[in-house]
Length: 256
Image (cartoon, rainbow, N blue to C red; front, side, top):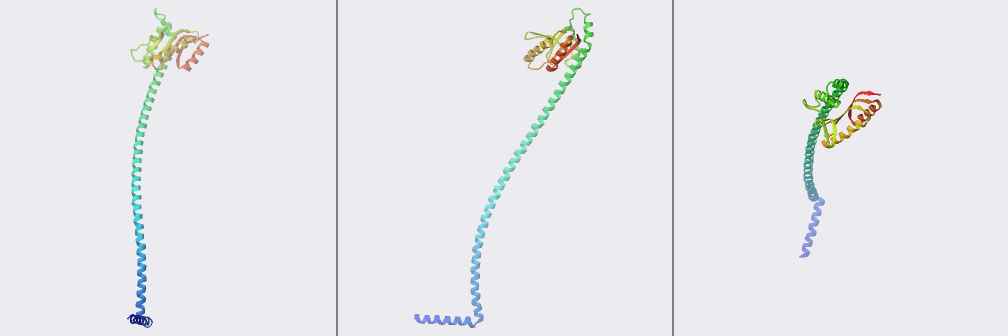
């Protein structure tokens, strides 16, 4: 029975080969089937490649999603930093404007002080021009000293210039045991008066008293030195000291 099956198989092969050899249509059908199988295998390989491609695309898409999330987080942090910097810039601008306002106030105060000093200078120049004449007239009034005359004259001059209030009076004062010929508290004024300056001791005495007043009132006083007469060499040295130490020096007459 096995022999019969083998013979049938041999015969079937011969018939198949005969058909391939003689029957063109059959041969084309067989070739088409073989080609279809190759195409099927090719499509299968392409499907596998396509699946891998899809996997890669999915992986890249996940990476892109993560990248997008990181970028959005970065943009958010960047916006927060920009907002913080914008707030800091606004604060700096406000502080700068406040500083400009303070500077303007300081400049205005300096202007007022400068005008006050200028008024004082004008008053003292007026005193300087009229001192000798005024002292000569003073002798008509019994008991009035040169110091009293100068104090009254300077009081009127400073009132007129607005340096001291109307009705205010320069006065004699004692500070820490030191007598001061001319004194006013606000604005702080310290002055010395002498009929004759024989040496620079008079202006040095004024400077010493001014330091006592400065220590007591915690601010720098305006310093005034008035001498009716002074020797030429003494006057020159007093002028040098006055320039260095900020003293308003008035000498009525230089002699010798």
